Image (tube, rainbow, N blue to C red; front, side, top):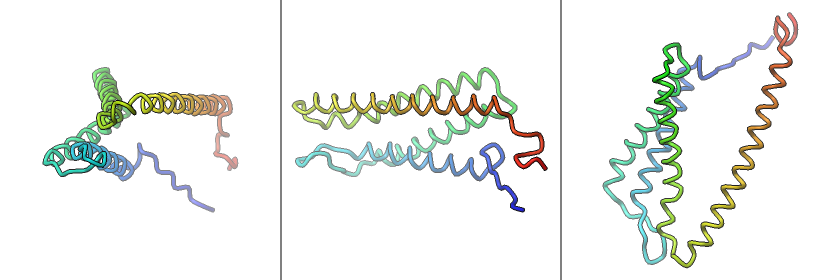
Length: 158
């Protein structure tokens, strides 16, 4: 008989710290990389900036704080205030993602900017369609799961 090892985020502090750490590392590196971008003779170049030393821990703290808010929302001490804070933090993260996505456009020459914006618009539409399809499939699977509850003694009935 095989023991099932199901670790969920709710039950595993290790998984939580992996999520927090990887997100913090990613957002820290992202913000630090934006501070070293520069326009050179050959296009976009990277030149060291001391702002990266500030941007990295700021991004890491932002990501870690966001996940801590998310995990607090799922715990027993959930309040309306916590939910409002999470909505505000989520809106801020979306705005930050949008700004980070558009930031490199300042390095595009004015002659090519229109073509780049058309390409970005096409990408946004395509990704939105894919996101809608994924959301629809997830909802269908959740509805099917709700309609067919598991047997009372597990999947094998013992």
